[in-house]
Image (tube, rainbow, N blue to C red; front, side):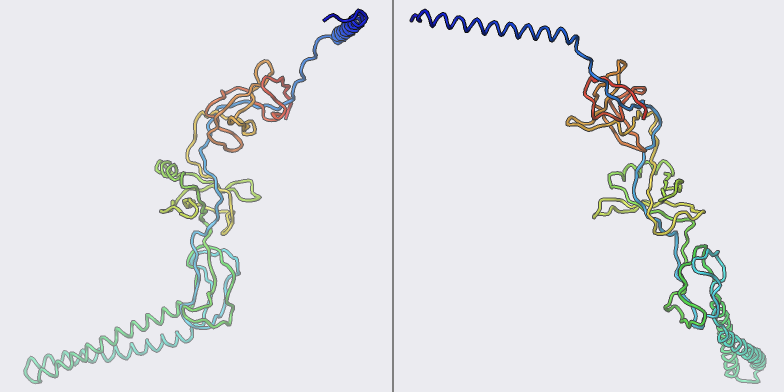
Length: 376
């Protein structure tokens, strides 16, 4: 179909105007690009770095522990009587054999004197009975007296001999009761709250308890570790003594002891095994009932490759680090971390000693990004 001549000319004129406009825009863009010059380089990302090291790293287990007394004694009176005096102050350290309490012993001393008098009487009677026995025995051999008198004399002498032995036992018991009236410390330790005072009447082996003494030097620290660590603990314990450290709150110096006990069963409710460490505690820094941070050292891993734990990040594909290469660009590298200890990540695979890793500023990094090292 042919268009009218006037309409054909109008269409050709519009197309030419559009092409002219496009040419003018292209020319302007080209002039703008030429005036802008070459593209500016990407800005370097400031980061803090650290060097990957190789050194010996201890293999450790950490747990929360509680200090327990090495031994404890609740003192009761073994005799009844009145407390005459107390020879210590509550909370005082005492040594084995130190005098603690004095109980009125006058009634037991009177019983002792009575038993001694009975012994003297029975011994005199026994001596006379033995003389008569010898006399009757001689007369019986001569046929002067009947054998019945000899038998009676023998029985009398035996009865008095038994009475003498009973008197001596009574004397020993009276002396023991007097000894019980003086109560001494059965071991070294620290006394607790005083529960009786002078003038208090006490009964034998009855309440109230006089005082509780706790032995805190040495002392125990009990803690629990997951049952999956039991095999390692037993294996390394068989090779020698395992050192244990207890970190005390607000104390920079940890207390040092050794593992001394592994429980014979796993707690089914928690899936843990109970362990106990013994500490000398000569300076009494560990206190009964106190909670401490426990570190059990099983062994030492030699020549381990370590990096600061803050260098290790976790992504969708696993753990990785940013390694700074020689051209000051960041390489994103996957790593395998076996464990962390004291702020260091032990690297099984992915890093070599001497390499530089980013420990701060990773949030702004992408692979192959330029970096500038700043001081921490």
